[in-house]
Length: 202
Image 1 (spheres, rainbow, N blue to C red):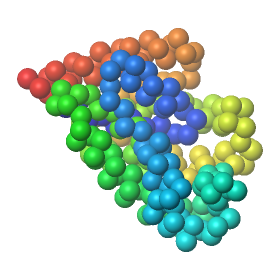
Image 2 (cartoon, rainbow, N blue to C red; image 1 turned 90 degrees about the horizontal axis):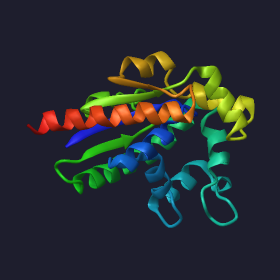
Image 3 (cartoon, rainbow, N blue to C red; image 1 turned 180 degrees about the vertical axis):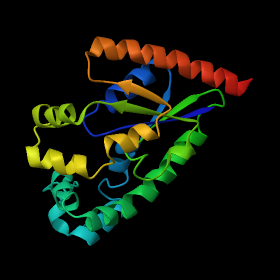
């Protein structure tokens, strides 16, 4: 099994890369998706979040309002740390369960936004960083995700600096170009991952 950490700043296009790797045959374990699951209605994770931040973080349907919660935690590092202490252990446990169910010859890609921030790079056989210049991150968050400029800047500031992410990269995917260029890069990346997995298995 080849264990790959895939990361990148918000708006860099990490999900585009993980989708393409999944299409090639990688087993993608998406930390963001699992983070939603562990605070779904009826979970003890959601109950703990509401206990920590109040019922105002819930929508009328009882589902966590991530935008409201985001505005609270990304403005206060202590509150962000409190949220992470609730969510991250649950996410980690679920990711380990999913990995253990993968076959021995699998290429398992852990799609994790905060590898650099949480010092997790040594947990993987290699780390892939999806990279774009910060100005492009900001533009995508405002234009494509409809964030207010200050919202986008707060979320970017809460993550590692670009230099910190690049310092842990074994492979960098530059996603500042076209989708066709990204397709080509991910095709080359998949070839390299298969080569590494074969070497590890031999």
